[in-house]
Length: 87
Length: 209
Image 1 (cartoon, one colour):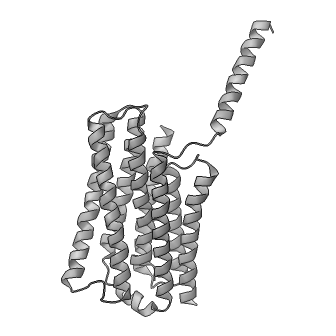
Image 2 (cartoon, rainbow over the protein chains, first blue to last red):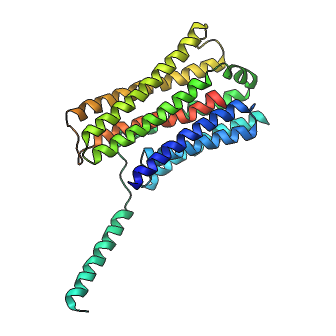
Image 3 (cartoon, rainbow over the protein chains, first blue to last red):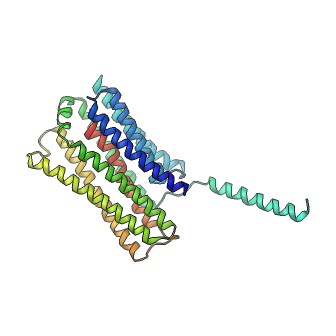
């Protein structure tokens, strides 16, 4: 029951972060702060999908390292490229 | 304390300790292991694609920022909400089959497929607008990335839906149960990957500038 309840919250959190990301994009004209917020929001959403939707919370560290490592490399690579472009 | 009480206590303690040790063992990856190698390869390809997009943008900032504004961000957001909800429905389908409730599993899979269908319809509307405006892969670098990235993802949504449909049909014919649900988990894992990729793609291509 608790697990199902948590899944509802995860879904709600993902929906709210998506809507928030959209409005941040609509309000701002870009820039470092908006970029960092949007990448951070995307990383949190991806983390929740890997952990709670894919159900990798309790799998071995190797599988978790591959998935979270992919997320870290992709998000930091994109953020680094955007920081260079804003420099 | 009598001998029998002590032995009962000891047995209970050992049982608790053993269950604690068991619970510390990591879970296996959900679904078939083969699908995970496929998922890792897909993620690698999409990851490289995303970083190449961001790097190419460095020397084309004005172009990317100008043409990004021509994209329909409302449809992009709606599609994100659809995919997240569809993924959530698949989580519920897996939970249902684990409880042995295959009927409820089938219903959640229908809901997930409805979400995927909604995504494909909205994406087709988006493409239709762009193609009718004469936009194609050779229009400029931004549109080349926009069309190739989103179409590549579109094909993955179609494949994911075919897998979900196959599992749904099998579930309808009672092929799964509370002790046999690997097929449902395998399809679910692939569908979540499709969602995961879009979660990065949406802000990257539609919003961040």
